[in-house]
Length: 70
Image (cartoon, rainbow, N blue to C red; front, side, top):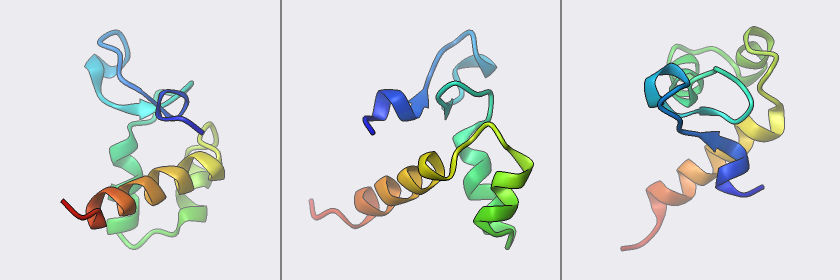
């Protein structure tokens, strides 16, 4: 899954907030839910337009970016 098919940044959608592609769900909400001790399944239940594959891919890419060597 390429980044363009995963995340959309469009000034016409939530003022340019990064959202999961094809949805109006901000990517940030995934992190907020996890920080709030919700499970991934609970997040997916609350945002059924986001697929498990999309959420896991965002988490994996975030982990890779965080731990990438400079």
